[in-house]
Image 1 (spheres, rainbow over the protein chains, first blue to last red):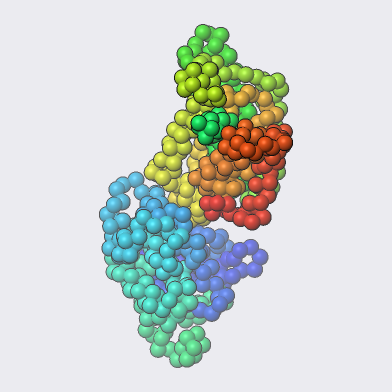
Image 2 (image 1 turned 120 degrees about the horizontal axis):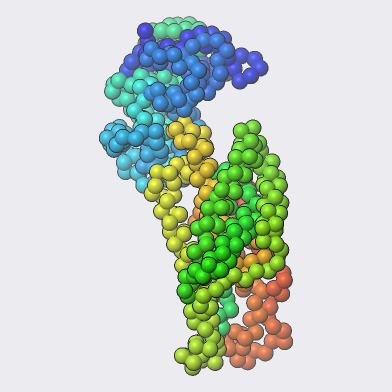
Amino acid sequence: MSFLDASDMRGGYGGADILHGCTLRVEQGKIAVIVGPNGAGKSTAMKSVFGMLKLSEGSVILDGEDITHLTPQQRVYKGMGFVPQVNNVFPTMSVEENLEMGAFIRDDDFQDTMTQVYDLFPILKEKRNQNAGELSGGQRQQVAVGRALMTKPKLLMLDEPTAGVSPIVMDELFDRIIEVARTGISILMVEQNARQALEIADTGYVLVQGANRYTDTGEALMANPEVRRTFLGG
Amino acid sequence: MDAVHALVVLTNYIIIPASAYGAQLALGALGVTLIYGILRFSNFAHGDTMAFGTAITIIVTWGLQSAGLSLGPLPTALLALPIGILATALLVLGTDRVVYRYYRDVKAKPVTLVMVSVGVMFMMNAITRFLIGVDDIKFADGTRFVISPREFKALTGLGEPLAFKTTQLITLVTAALIVIALFWFLAKTRTGKSMRAFSDNEDLALLSGIDPNRVVAITWIIAAALATTAGVLYGLDKSFKAFNYFHLLLPMFAAAILGGLGSPIGAIAGGFIIAFSEVGITYAWKKVAGYLLPNFEPEGLLQLLSTEYKFAVSFIILIAVLLFKPTGLFKGKAV
């Protein structure tokens, strides 16, 4: 059984369904990437995994436990970390305070985790007393990922972490994400930059119209001529 | 010597009264700005929350006075203040439970909440009048002056008097202590930080496991404490009249918006700027001018606006800010 097993999800924001039987699985310490055209329901699929959307059918199982009916907050306690695409930091609070707020649900000493986050993103340590709203786009994304890591999640979900950052920063962010996965954290990520994302993916999901079209290892998807032609631009 | 006299006159008629008034406005505006930042609406009932808290404090003060208790040189009302704060906190928490919570749950638009707060304002207004009536009440006791005009003249040998009332000193000291405590709370404590986080980004705060009901309750309690303290200080300094507290709503909102809604430091700066503008523009400058410009003999009193129009000053500042800098001096939220 996979660490995360979200199977046959169906649902939408009221009215017509957006997801028509979408299945996402992530193994422990592996990276799964959701790619697909605009409007395919990539973000919706991930939000459903996090409970931000009521499913009419399907189930979400995390580490063997059925969490289909839990609220997003309850899922955080179960070990999910979520980094929204936008508005993912507290802009008028310092970097350090952002991380502290990430650890809000923890009653134990979280200094170790903060040190780990600073080791992972050294620039954040340098800017620890600066307000998150004053940082560059790439640095802000690091704060957002760092904040989510503070709960010591077992599954980290990233909604387009590289949206709006430069290609150099994007490569660096992907490197960091690989490092996070190496510590045993499973990663589920939605990406617009499909090519680069699939390069680091253990599993890739190509969604079309709210359903799985192709599922394979990242490498195999990159090699698949049809996927290349249709979704990766040749 | 003339310059010294001018300075004494200025201190006596502008600097001391405006500082005390500014501190009172700042405390009121802090409550307004906190509620705006966290509950995301302009609370029109804030002036009447102040009136209610002050009314309770006055009633308790009367009780203490008839029981023979006092603070010696300090006003007895300070002893009654904690009870006033407690009663006001219970009132606003109760109001939140039966009124505001419903509108939060249905995710009402901010403008709806503003209208709801107008309704709450009328209710609180009525409660206060039932409790204590509509008359002008003076409840300051204890020593009247820190520096009395006669003492000052005798001591310095100057021709101009200077008065520094005990209530003005208490206002400044209390306001300073409360502001320091509030900023420490918001900057250093876990609860205070969670309030700032909630104000900054509500969705992310929820994702981080911050309990919205707790944040809202603490905000109301702090707002009640700020409002009651501001109201009691204002009442000690001048007098208590329910209707005047309703009037304070305008300068308080002007202060909060001028500073930038949601910004505590802005509320304080705004409070003092509004107070100094109000006092400065309605003050007759003839005497000061007489000392500083000996050959200048103005025909009038050199008063820009008569004191009845003091609220026009807040109103003009409010409109100017909304037109030209809607986020205020300290980059608050746009209205």
